[in-house]
Length: 123
Image (cartoon, rainbow, N blue to C red; front, side, top):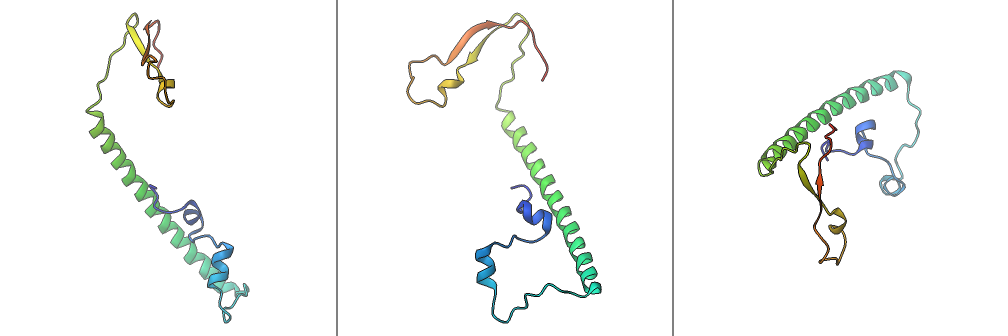
């Protein structure tokens, strides 16, 4: 979503040709030969390389914009989240994650514990 194009389009600079689309767009007078003079082929490759380079720069800009929006969203939403300082020896409760996705079990406990924190590791 952040690139605003498909991976195929980002790599090749064109949309994929699938059988249904090829048959629908092929007319009787269309030239289907692939033989092109060498100098024209080189020019076409240079133009294609330039368009793909432009496309990659646009994709990079789109990714940067998406990253900035994500960060601003996280900052805005993070203000409503309380952060807790947990130290060794504190008693904590652990959430019952199995209860979230299951139907029924309304009488099941929301929390497990209390547990005593024995050590803290950095992730």
